[in-house]
Image (cartoon, rainbow, N blue to C red; front, side, top):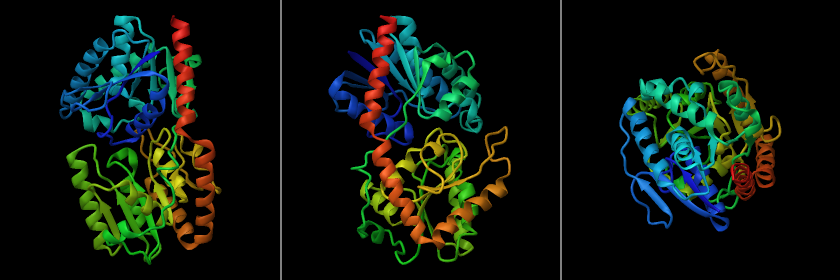
Length: 394
């Protein structure tokens, strides 16, 4: 079976959870399929990978260029048995491929545009276009793969024209050999981190979705001496990056030890950071699953995370971490931001003050990641979806 996978992100250009998903899924599918990759950006040396060097502009230009790339991808997949699209950037390409070549279309849903209203600030009037591209593709797809049960429920709620029988759930995975406890300290020492202080770690994109502003406000109430380390290398816009830098500087001025890692950060350094952190914090206000939580758990780290989306399907309250109640308002942000910040700080402080509980949760998290979340298992289930879609349309 030949499968053409359509994605914006593909190594080495990976900046978010969808890119991590695609990289691991393709690695595990390749031994079993004739897999062709269509992605954005510069050409790759890998066989079977075709890149589309159409640059992305700002605002509405981003959506228009994505539409142009989708048209090109949809034309290029002629001869494939099936196309598999990821995110709105390429969902329309799968829709075009189905309409033009009669190829079944499977779409993995990593998020939904209508549930991310802050994207209007990033895409301007292109947000309406991105939402249109997503809806047309998902309603017309032969199969939809949701990365969590919460995501599956959102799909049929937001797009009622979607037949629930076409939606299945396949959780993201984690490579527990790549992400594993590393008690070395050389990378952390090179960064000048204080190893004699309890550390709180966070890894996120600078975006309203990821809730970093709430985390910085919560850090003002962390127990004295707690060191906050935020790995935030990418941002939705230069302006958001600038504002985040100012917020970090203001927090430092209050005496809170906070480190912002904004540049290259090797995987080995990340594993050491997660291993040595007392807790990993995920303050996202919208998170269909949250691969970063799985990565932290695989490193044996207790997790404090917002009780949103698919996070409770990964982080088990009281067993592998602590969940922070978060009721969203119409704009997707916490209905009571001040309360969310207080509750976040309280849970972090609970684990800072109780290292034994944090260690127990970390051990449980490692076991859960190993036993319940593997990319090999996810790839097997994806292959079964492919076979079902081909049989039905064949």
